[in-house]
Length: 358
Image (cartoon, rainbow, N blue to C red):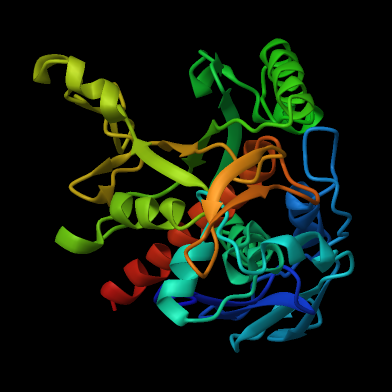
């Protein structure tokens, strides 16, 4: 079971949803990075459960401890280990599915792969694992900040409700001013009302998180198999409930002709720029210095508070109904996760690029 991600900036996460805690080991973070614990805490607060009426009501403060790799607030270049203890597990909420397979969950596949599974909240397959990723992503963001790179994500769709504005028309700071994390207040209110109604219907709904990385220098990425967009796709598709990834013009680009889609070059002072950015800041798998932007599609949360047809481990027909505390829509809490995974990819490729020029 692979639990590591990245090469030069490598993370390994551990822990389960209803175990004693979760954590991450970060290997490869350069020495001298200012490790702002208040910033890490803020990032974890953005992901934590129990934030609002449209998120799960599990109460986890997600307080963390840095066990190694930091001295007097600065990274030492040795592995950084961070642990987050679980404090509000209600494992009894899952005893009813101890031998049953919940539809669209990892219960059956984990049982087939390992012959044993932790049914409490999904164990290792739970989205709670992403708390460790967000902690690591916060460290990556702090490293990227020194290079002038910023990563911002926001909710651009919930069900059929879409934010139609281009990201250049948005103030990313507005995202944190509402519980759905959509930077347009009017659209955000519609999303909130819709998700809350879905919750009252004892159902769930999916959505889209859009992400923009700005200040990325040209030259990041590897030819052929380790292209920058391929790494971003790998990172995003590794997040729980993600069903799709597209960057730049994405699937809409098929409607255009090459004469429309090509990004013409021009000089802006001593810098080469493109007049349009249908490439999404990546050409030939390598960053070109323009904004990198992409969209991530999340399916409806699989746990619903309704009876569903299923089978148990003996192959007998049964009925499964969700219990406990679950998100009616995952995208508001997924925003910091998408940012974290993007930051981890960029930190990794930034360090790999430095190594390639030695």
